[in-house]
Length: 177
Image (cartoon, rainbow, N blue to C red; front, side, top):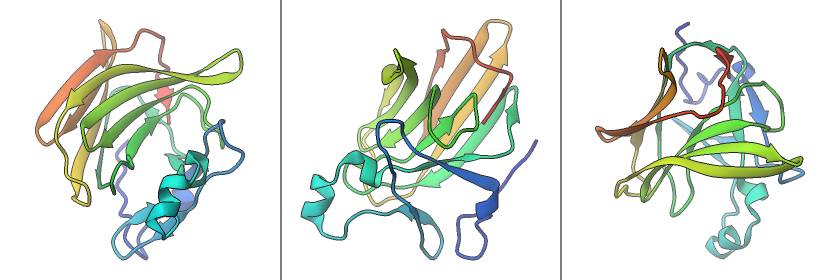
């Protein structure tokens, strides 16, 4: 499968995606359309941004059509201050995240997190990272590769020509979102 979309006003195929919230919060933010991109809603006042519970600013989305096997996911993103855009991989398509993987871009580089439920409570662990100095309010290309081979399933994260990879310990399905 090959899929391409633009997040520009009038081009973003909203119906192709499902908004997903964290199980830690009863609600999540919303997407706001800008001229050539989308952003999550935040309070306009800088002091209020720092006081906002994460659930009020967190939002993610999953492509409704599943990926199969090895894949490369690329996006251009930026962040303000310590906010962190990410690529999400999930074995299921649900409106509330359960088990999933996040490749997160932030001012200090990339982090790869595994999210799971532990006794029905959200838990997470760091699988890998790449130290980079990344400027806020600057567009960065974030690339996530899912690689199935005879040695297992690997996630490769890349930004600014630098990358890292890690092997997933837990089984990962052949079809995912």
